[in-house]
Image (cartoon, rainbow, N blue to C red; front, side, top):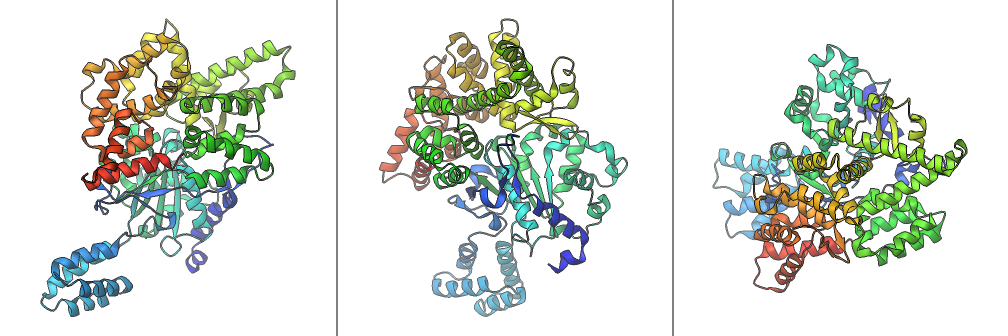
Length: 620
């Protein structure tokens, strides 16, 4: 507390972050009240991954073991220190378990390094001074806090909200105030904007401080104050959205200079979708944690809070989710729960959800209903501007076509950022304010962006579907899909497209899409097989009819056999991909059940089978 009194920058940072006390509205609507971060924030499940083979991220946590729930405030804490110290001492004191236990307890309670050295010297009399020093240094490394953390999570899982929550709690002096003097939230997507213009030659002197200053967007904080921080060990950098800029690593100098500067700091948390992080980047972090969204209790907590003033609707939704396990599984992803809550008050949509087969429900259907709800709401607001419903619907159709176009074009060129020129080139034929009022697009500084990246990806998928249906564009579009199918940037778009295609009754569309993503299964074994398998797992999980994979898919059996053969060769490595994608073939289900029933099974395989069942069952 004293530090912030003496340092105006710390005070201003805490004032800034503590003022961010509401969750951003997903949809701008006066009827939708802002949600208090204190009241509405539902704790996400964050799993610490200790298994190096599963991700190769942790330079420090290289111990095979279970994934463990970790509280956000403990994200930097050393784990299993007693066990690790015990393992170290067993080499020095074989067959002396009782003595080792006593030493471990003494070392665990002692904070003073000299006194720790004294404990070791008393208990290891046969060791030289230098040997004891080496052991003491090893123990200090075991007990030291982690600095760099990679936070992974799928689309809409709540990564940005978690970063918002962490900075808010620090600003309220409820998190890490003994460890961190400065927190800087960095939106990596801003690298895609023209952010450098305002900084001139300062860029060459300290590009990271310039970028931090730009992201803070605060008139009260000066660039020099950031540049003049001398103790980098007291700084925490919160980098959000690596997956949105990963493609810049190949040829963007500003990106490389900023990322190189970032890793000169001790304390860093960076978020990303898992498939965007290559091994080289992953290995720059000391710890990897997985944001797995909400469990059943978390979903119920959010629904209860959302419908606290209309409890009957909340009861209906909870009952619906309890009897529709596939939809409840989708709700583990917080944005999906928020979307269902948003449209649940519409009786027509409720009826449609309840009539749909639970086994075949996919995320494309959910997003389709939300977009339809937004469109109906927009028509109600704007109906007086037009002569009749036909004219109003035609204008809406033009707006949606425009939104699909810019969603696709922006995704290809700049990712989430929608540049001003792309939108305003249409201002002679479209009312941009009306496009904004529709609800999917919003202004972001001088540019634009969609209300959430997943909506942009859904609209881009609709654009791709329409191009696949058009004889003039289908070949070019199929080639584009084939070229980019293994690019992590397009995974979510292709998942949406798989669901959209599955929901259509058009065999030609199904065939051209699946041929584009497989390009002849017989020759699919090529460089990058792992990404290809992950893609196919995600796409098939969105393609079900009556609970089974859509048999209209060309070469379905070969695709399944390819996936199953690769996955079953080493099922522990593929465990998280099975859970993340939702892909479960009959062969994998049978194998998992056999592992559970086989008492002779290798422990790691038995544990993996248990975790797959648990991971999927938790969503039921």
